[in-house]
Image 1: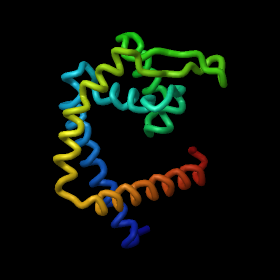
Image 2: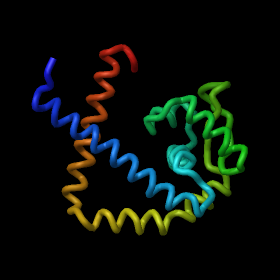
Image 3: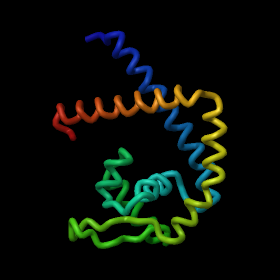
Image 4: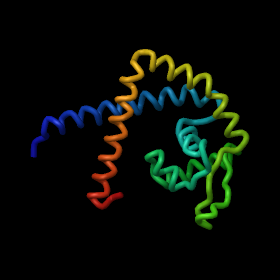
Length: 153
């Protein structure tokens, strides 16, 4: 089976996304390491900044494997950067939230993270960035729908 022009275009997006992911991870490392975090620790903490969540909820929100989030959450708790709370909705699936030290690390990255995003965003219009975000959201929904259709979701 040959790819359609749309399939070719999506393949190009996939390859560029892999490249972007690597670039974003390198930037995240530069921003997070001075505060004693790794990019994956920052990603998991980022999943609970607005509210405590279960490991499964963090994994869904961040597009990560539940087992990976569990290992990272356990490490964050061990390092004193997060804490587990009882979950009223599920006795065994505790909620994760940043500890005081976790909040301090997150806040310590704010200036560097803002400088990075402002510096890169200055190369685009707000409308271009919003259109990109909108397309990414649509692609995510299409991928989730495709996963469900294949029985893997």
